[in-house]
Length: 391
Image 1: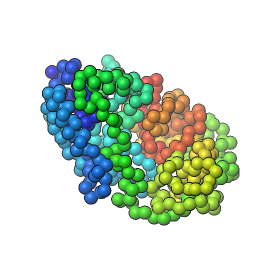
Image 2: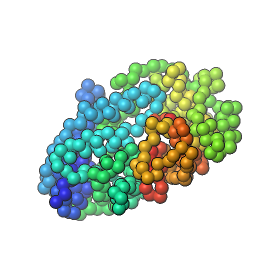
Image 3: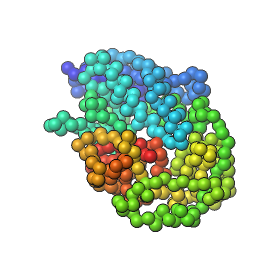
Image 4: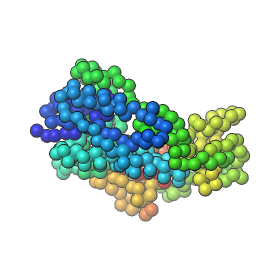
């Protein structure tokens, strides 16, 4: 009998994951991950990990499976939280969900499961996995298009996928709820968790202020008629121009005018709309660029602002990752792929191009809010092929 350690989170998805595996004849062990939780940070009341742990224990008891709690707070702080602070300090916007899967769930947690003699680990992700006759692992989108979570696994390696099971990937969310109700699981009606545990419901700037000192600066509005923006949007949209098209916009104070103040440029992200607190502008304002060196935030009105929309992006060589190495590009090669630059974004048609200094992605349509530090992931049909952090 194959042994599986399930990451029981106390939610309905992982509960049904454990239930299905037991029904399929696996020997199932439930394990709850206690991730970083710093009592000195005033987020304790917004982090329901104790309630979630109790729910996970109740589910294990319902299913008659062994249960334990593993404390990964040290690794989580070192690999995820500290990385987040470092990236925001550089003016980049990390994706901790992607990192948590790569560094914690399918690394530290996986090792702990293997030490228990497990053959596999399983999670409640809405995605699917297949293996071919050559032993190659293929990561596929989940059946439920509104819940597909393959993007969050875009940094996994073949050896990690080989040990992973995703039992609910072939189900719609409504079907998972129905299985939970039919089986009498106590989490059947439990609401989905929102955001990261250690962030909770408070604003990200408040969280970041635990490490990054507030520093007052100016918000500079950039007009849509700026000459350099007109010039960018006149560049031919083709592979020969992709390096120019992928270059992030860079503004100076002299090119705009002050419309407000902020408490630290590192608290903001490209494409951000909420939290700017700019009043009196005819249209909604968005963050166009963050200048960490001069502590400036540049804004523009409307989501159609030419400084918010670009045709291409770059991924530096050391950030390129292939989930399926069969599709690795050599310098000078390219292929047509479907790409997303954030979770839940509909897939976008694009050309993925390998050059000496990295990968360039040229989109057929303008992309709003291409954000440094976030991950671009490319797909062939339903399979996630590769990914990388945006430069």
